[in-house]
Image 1 (cartoon, rainbow, N blue to C red):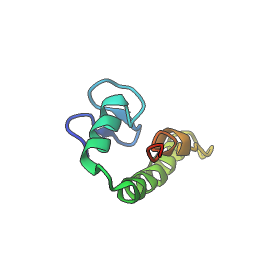
Image 2: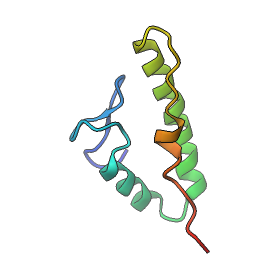
Image 3: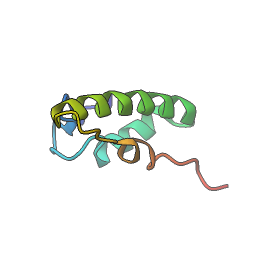
Image 4: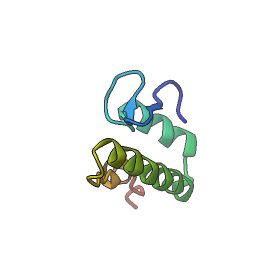
Length: 80
């Protein structure tokens, strides 16, 4: 997990700025950490997205909460 901007589970807010995680700082740290390993970053975020969906759904009385966009749409390969 990147620096101090880590998720507060099970509510999946950033421990530092209380924004939905991954917050802007966490995204920057993840991009820096994974560099050119886009498949590795996507694998990590896919697993975390599934866990966050599970946690948030449980907290919302079973109403499915989908965080796919929040976790994955910001990761894009560079334009070539």
